[in-house]
Length: 434
Image (tube, rainbow, N blue to C red; front, top):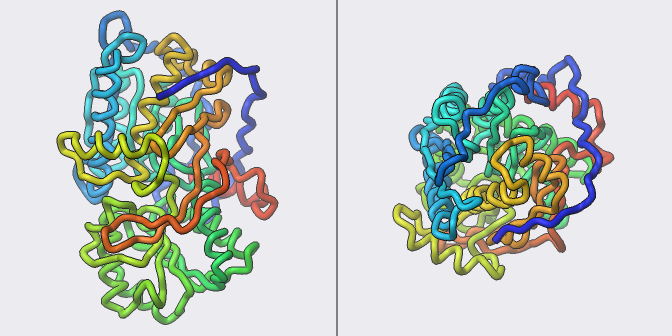
């Protein structure tokens, strides 16, 4: 499923400089300001306790199995188990069987940091897989950098980040949010209302959305946030009704979406009058909304309905797996990819050593023949190429694909290839997000 071939070493990634001032739009959203972009000096001196001398290799799975994010992250955890079982049945990684240790992040960002520390220093895992919210990733980031560990993050996010200790298998901004706005502009949309959870991803994503919407001639007629652990959207949805936008752009995460959808229908809004386009509601979340959401939209890189060579068999294996939800989705597919990406990196390096793995990422073309298609790792920024897709929810809570990108989209986490995204704004958002 995964392959690599040697290529010429490319130039080192230049991460945009951080500036001292933080963007006001991100104030108070839980970001960790001042996170280092590179491992600290102590990390270099930190001695790994990974033991690869035996017949097994330990890996950590870190997902919210309780709390508001469990509605999404339980499936990510389960598919990581499935991928590990598949890899073990196929001979393991460098001939070693995966021994996985599951931890619960409990929808609590300090807990994510605490469990990461435990997995790296007590359990001595070779890599950690999981997380969902950007706040969970931001909590893990300084810990894996301090200990020179590896973290594989499977969910779309706001971009503006890269780390030598993190590999990103979900979409960055130019692979999900920008295609969504391009689609809306092509449909003649002139006004948008932004609804998000109150933490780093929605705040940063919406700052980017406002810039690109202005470039496209789309007016933002409102912007509202509710904390991730709250589900009463009545007041905020009343503002949507008053603004009467062409579309609502939804960056809400977790079970808070249930409260938003309830308030949306209670207020008399419908997909026919005020459609929603989401970047966090997928096949598993759609039937859990408590109301039929047929006719609304989502922007993802993978849908269960995709017609790709590997997707049918992937769906059948997942449906047959113990504890399966019975449906696939973008984040769980990206989590599935992450374990196979790690396998390819280790095999390219011939080692479980983090520095050797990062060197192999630069020196080789690493690909994974995934359910969404053949994805390619960018060894400089640790993101992968992705197809862009927009889907419309049907009565079966599946997505009818209404738009697809012509080719896979290369990752540009800092949006350096976009003239409408000024460097000073980029640097302020990077500093604010941490």
